[in-house]
Length: 64
Image 1: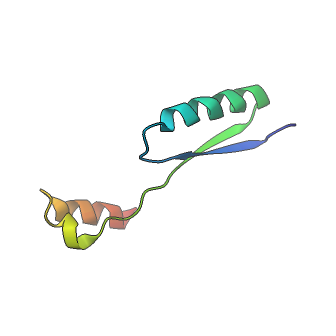
Image 2: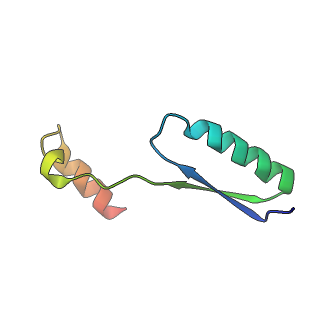
């Protein structure tokens, strides 16, 4: 089976590097493009303001 593009989910779990390594090996083997997607929930503004520099953090993710 041939894959032209491989998408790998990168998340804040404990083992995203393992998934990325496997996806990279598959991409090389198939001469495929490798796309990494980072999926993280948006933080709740009600508690982010309690963090140091929380307002700046919220502003930075609104731009993205």
